[in-house]
Length: 162
Image (tube, rainbow, N blue to C red):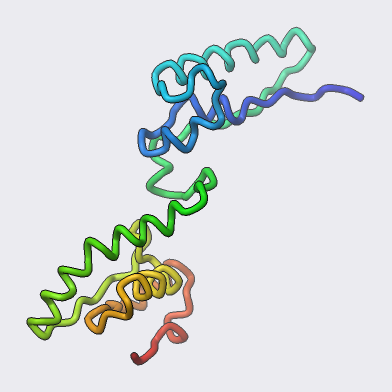
């Protein structure tokens, strides 16, 4: 067996953690630095610097992650703790229900644009929200086929009548 490379994927990720991910990424760190983002970053940097010693093993490459200061806005990683999504939709419904009730009294529908970056970004998340607000009669989708196409969703199959 021959060592071909060392990896510091998790430590590399901890070099640059967006504050929104502090709690989520803490599990990747040594126990003594958890809950202290600045100290965790210093620890991760030190781990990377130690890994540079892989040259002593005759290695010429090293694999790692760069960290994610912007990624929280692009891709949902790392894995979410159990219940996080459910809690978020419960909170979303709680915040929206009074607004929806006001719109109902006014006789106006609320049409949500399903869009990347929003909690309601596809049919599944829309249905989840709709269930969370007990199928509120004012909840609708702003049908914009261009956004469906951008997300590679079936915009014709998504047309439905309530």
